[in-house]
Image (cartoon, rainbow, N blue to C red; front, side, top):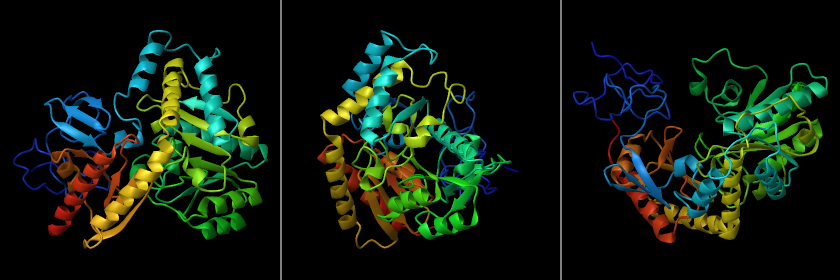
Length: 439
């Protein structure tokens, strides 16, 4: 009897169609959301010494330039994913490459036991852009969110709350460490890792009334942790007054407002940070992804009482904020400023969204077309994991999230012609997919 799908995150016991060719990537009918490929009997990776926590597409990239990537066979691909909102300046950007090389030739790492000039300069720059006061640097978004969670708990204990709780949203994603995994509003990524961390209260996203109800019934709440736009859950954009409403609730109840801007920050939505589309500033904000353009860096920013909570010994990171990553992040910010990319992203995002709506307006099977800046989504009526491979075959990198949402996160530096190519190829893929009856 054949074994089920090799992917350990797949619960299906069905045999994949066409399994006679096991080295091919086959769609698995029972695969969980967000894991669209089945690898039955054969290991899905080239190197068998890697753990099997990823399900990579059958391609290996060797070089990149701007919005383009080349694989090890010389095939060229247009990147509409940016390493999942990471490479905002595209690939091999001269300013990033020069900053990396120059700093690597000078000093890569010391320790946070000593002052680091680039770290202090970067902190000053970020706080000025965000209207915040202090920064903690780590290596990833999950670490930035861990720092935010620890700040909220310290805040609660200073208020003599023995079991401080943080409100988190259904459909959210905050990371894969134990605390951030628990904060994430997706049961599938939590399964198998129980017991989860205590101290989180769940609420529907974009529902201020639900938060008001919690405020009336739970005196242990000390903070609200929310994404300005839910990313992994399908590019869900809340009502215009949502963040302002959360700000008021936090002020009225003495809570901290924590924004996870890991996917939305650093120009992705057309402002430095997505909260700048509102009239409210958070107490704590987390960043990563686009801040380093591929170099691992995370940041937790805070203001007011939250900025003074951490004291020596409360938190730390061996690599966090070292000279190499901070020099790179400074180059990213300087380039965004110099090239005025925030304004460009706002304008191009509006154009692409309008063009998608025009091209797909009469296509049956589409639920919604939405976006802000270069954070775009086309939601379909049925699961569409097949589009990942179809897009790769067409020379385009995109993403399918929440099972039925085509997600586009192109580099912020794409040209009008590249944007048009993304629209044309994506629309053709969606039309062809929807014209084919589901299995």
